[in-house]
Length: 438
Ligand SMILES: [Zn+2]
Image (cartoon, rainbow, N blue to C red; front, side, top):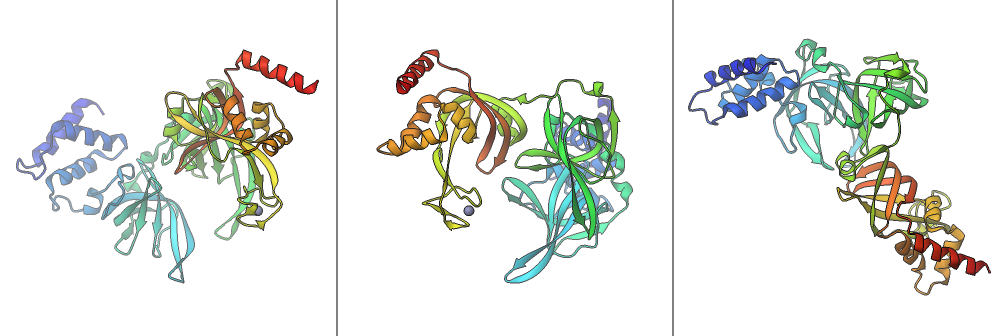
């Protein structure tokens, strides 16, 4: 929309708003708010009504209060009461929970509008199904693990409404690169290559259904995907997916799409660059919370507790505490080594977990040699000392998946190498090793 048009609409709004409106509003403020609505494809009249209502406090202005007080999903804040939405049900599933010893059936799922999607929980039965367009009044929000949760409680009223109120054009797919994918985005269009593809069967509403999942990539990164429809693409194909939405697991974006999406097979040349592991600055990784198959480089600023020689349960691989597994009790542990470290590149810091093979490579010692080292040291700290000596404050390059949780972002290393190999130190170590052999 051109600015001139915008000016006219803002004039309209200002004309309606009384001079003695409770909330004074500046033209600039109105412009920002109006633009936001329009950006998300809200029809201009509806956007104007909403703003007039918001700034005048007038509840009689429109005959359709539920749509005029509407909040866009993207703007939902935690701990809000009386939230009104116009949205479409993207998924809805029953779930049994126990409340005060009694079984109760609740519903959970995802709703979406032109600005995004959000998970919801309904605490009572609802007469709606996937794909319905609904008007919601008096929902409320909470915050859980840093994200807004939408609840339909006892006060909620939900009415099915005309699909045209939220036209498909509102969900018209926009083009994204893989690195731009964020949880909550809907109507995604992505051109990418299928790098991994798995097929499994699951049950949906009592019927068997094939689900396809795997990894797709473009020149900016890789993401996981789930397709609820057989689009007949194969591993290696370059495809354009229109009409997906993004869920996330531990910060890793998951592109999800079903029979409502379109998938078009393209020539390989449509991919604008090579698909490779992306090296990304750590602040970006922290901001994204997680990512699939990335590379990062920085200085090791901490060797964290939990590093060194550990014992694992032979049954379930859990780390033992005092020879005990949380699940299997007292067991004969099998030894393992790992390094948990914090790497900082000057823009941000994340944790990384380096497993046995890579730890052996970094230390130049086998697991057995590490066990001996611990056995023969008085305080049992020899291995940690060794890790501090050869890795702490050194520059490291790690590659793997980055997972986010409440404690931050952690790279689970698939590759790790020191990139500041100190030649003097290496020479000294080599001569020491030679001495040991002689
Ligand atoms: Zn166990």
